[in-house]
Image (cartoon, rainbow, N blue to C red):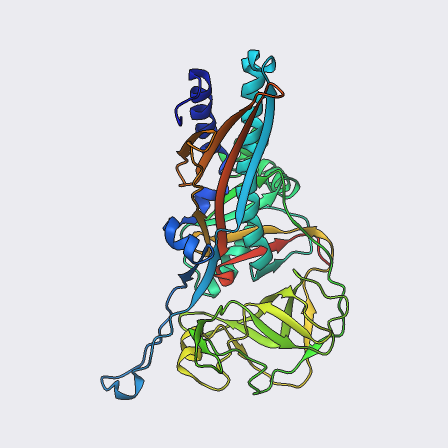
Amino acid sequence: MANNFSKEERVAFENLLEGFQDAEVLARAAVIFNSDSTEMERSNNIIWRPQPYILPSYTGSDQSANFQDAAQLAVPAQLGFRKAVPWALTDTELRDALQEGRLGDAAKQRLASDINVALLGAATNLGSLVVKRTVAATGFDDVALCDSIMNEQGVPSYDRYIALSSRDYNNMASNLGARGTVQGKVQTAYEKAYIGNVSGFDAFKLDYSLRLAAAGGSSITMDTRDSGANYWTPKSFAVSTSGETANVDNRFQTITVSSTTSMAAGDAFTIAAVNAVHHITKQDTGQLKTFRVVSVPSSTTLVITPPIISNQVSTPSGTQYQNCVVNTKASNSALVFLNTVSAAANVFWQKDALELLPGRIAAQPDAGMNVMRGKTDSGIEVVMQKQADIKTGKILYRLDTLFGVVNKQPEMSGIILFSQT
């Protein structure tokens, strides 16, 4: 039954898979994790994926007082995207092989786009490194700032990517194309609007990009003094009152602010006197730490990423994962918003930040339908099903895929905003 497809249909499916691989642009810029389908079904399609360890070092030969538990942090990843493209052809329309081919191409493009958009959303919505530019995109200087913020905080210098809206990408290409003294890249930028690798980032041009609205909040403050609610202490798991343990997602923290009026998910901000530190050396970078709003649960609380791990009251896990320092503690430290003008949220990331999880759909060929399945280079399984309706003379087709995406480390991904005030 599984092979009950015409030769033309089998060839079309093979061609579709090849084109699907070509269209998975962002999938090649993410880590692929292949999970066990049986285990995923038994765990509601959720698996906890580890974040990188960060360990401190100490001076001297006697390390008796420095042996501490290493906190292993993890984040939940879910096979949360089930995408399908269904269509129908009549028994007369099937005579037109070109028509059938065009429909397959359209289905392929739609599913590949769904994967790219899901990865883009994970990076855009949770990326916590924010570069604000008061001018339009100009080229090297813009991407160099993305390079700087990553370097200062210890993000690995390899496998870095940046995805730009068409207008911002083309602005960069225009700037490069005007530099007649530079060979090679100039001609390519001028003729094809292609900028290639810039400041260590492989650059992609997007025909779709998410936009970030201007922040509406103003005059908002928070307490940054040494209170347990004002900073975050990383922990691998939490123990409930009944004694049960559960994993903790350390990408987020709920903070209390003076007001959340007009604030929205996606807003980017800094906190007065809260500087970023290098994640390995813990050295103050001299630059304000950037944060993103994940949700606004009440009139005085925000869920943010990353959490404020300032190690104000020293703990082993706080020492290991410290990401910022509070240089001036106050009851009314000001939040300053960075997204002051609505604009495209161009995204940049290090490959290990994003993870793509291919899933499996157990379509049964002996359940009254014909089934073909194949995998792309990234491991994404595409299932094609066909069923005839004798009452209408229509042949029903569908292409399905199941996958998940997760931003494991918001501090290894971020956004760059242009033309801000």
